[in-house]
Amino acid sequence: MSDLTLDMQQTAQPASAAERTALLQNPAFGRVFTDHMITLRHTKERGWHDWRLEPRQPLALDPATLSLHYALEIFEGLKAYRLPDGGAALFRPDANARRFRASAERMAMPLLPEELFTDSVRALVRTDRAWIPTAEGASLYLRPFMIGTEVALPPKPATEHLFCVIASPVASYFKGGAKGVTLWVSENYTRAAPGGTGAAKCGGNYAASLVAQAEGEREGCEQVVFLDAVERRWVEELGGMNVFFVFDDGALQTPPLTGTILPGITRDSLITLARGMGLTVREEPYAIDQWQADAQSGRLREAFACGTAAVVAPIGHVKGRRHGFVIGNGEAGPVATRLKAALTDIQFGRTSGPQGWLDRLF
Ligand code: PLP
Ligand code: COI
Image 1 (cartoon, rainbow, N blue to C red):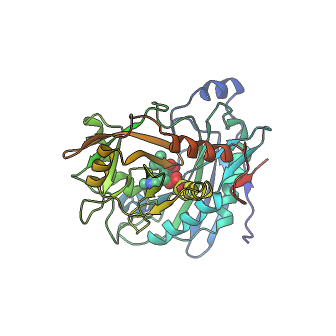
Image 2 (image 1 turned 135 degrees about the vertical axis):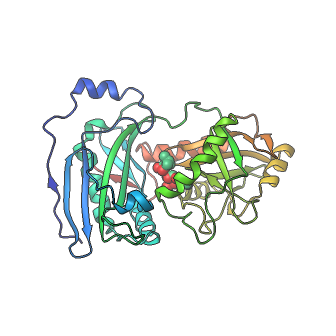
Image 3 (image 1 turned 90 degrees about the horizontal axis):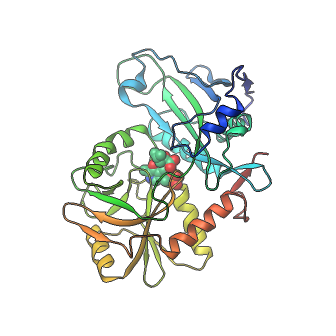
């Protein structure tokens, strides 16, 4: 247990109820922010210290701050959900806390104790509870992150770090609703190689994926699907989501966690839920050419992407230099629809899920 106490410095100028209500009308993903943030500092000498809840404000950074030059940054994404009785809960925050430690380890950053992570997120949600949307499917997205703040130019692990949590009310990630998303198969760019940082949630992975995302958008696609860096054959994941396939015998398949993809908490939750429904789930590689052949033969019935921001998003069309195919009728299929309902019913407290998944805040 940590013996730190959180210093609460609430803002004297919160958004007014009218301003907040206007901002909470169908907010675009990550564009609206709440009144407060959490900060916590780490130095080699003092360990974790100066744990604060404070008014949300810009960070002052020296231009030679290590993270600005060498991408010493990791982050997490989780949500607070409004419950039917007016309370609120987080979904599996302990899993995010553990993954944050794993990301920190990969990036040579200090390991944040799990309860400092979860208590920070809980304190921010409790303070900014008025910002948790009540609209159907909307939630409060939490973005914990850490940067190396030492002022130095030699590329090396930082001796000073800042952990910070901000919060953003969000509605749905995609505009299309039940319509399937269109994917661009990235042949020119890969996301992660064996031995690299693919399994870590570090900003650099996303920076490197954006040129592929831009290429996909030029080709009329909404998201990019990445292939493995060695053979350029195996489907890995999207820029910010894991991927599942559903076959005509009812079985599901998703790429295995071999170190180059992010171990998604939604992915893990859906595997548990699907198995609980009696469905077979394989964690096995799937080749892009096989995906096309199976979609064309009808052996593949559905494909969907999943993640905290996107929840469960059916994949409708796949396009690439060497590929072009539609999945089913291009819209949400029954398995994706059923799994999404099962997951969101638990997250919004409409049904009870496995022990410990819902972390009630009030
Ligand atoms: N893969 C990538 C690259 C991601 O950024 C995300 C989103 O966080 C995921 C997968 C899904 O992870 P999770 O379900 O934990 O949000
Ligand atoms: C998330 O789902 O939390 C993500 O991180 C995906 C994307 C917004 C980066």
